Length: 59
Image 1: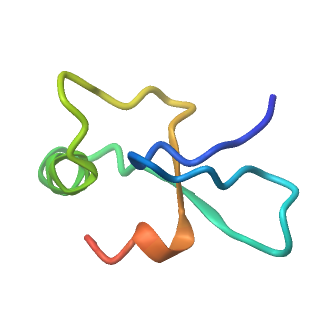
Image 2: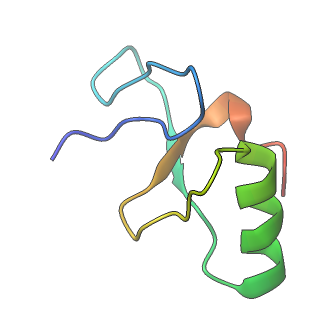
Image 3: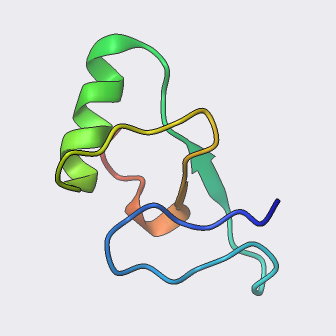
């Protein structure tokens, strides 16, 4: 499976020059903050959803 970023407009994919992807947190409040920061309409992350490193400042 190819890992790609779930952020709107981000085209980064696994295999590009040393980039890191992170899983969306599973715990309630932190997960809600991440989903709100990603701001995709009517979207809930799956267990496979990943986000590219520069977008992870929502911790």
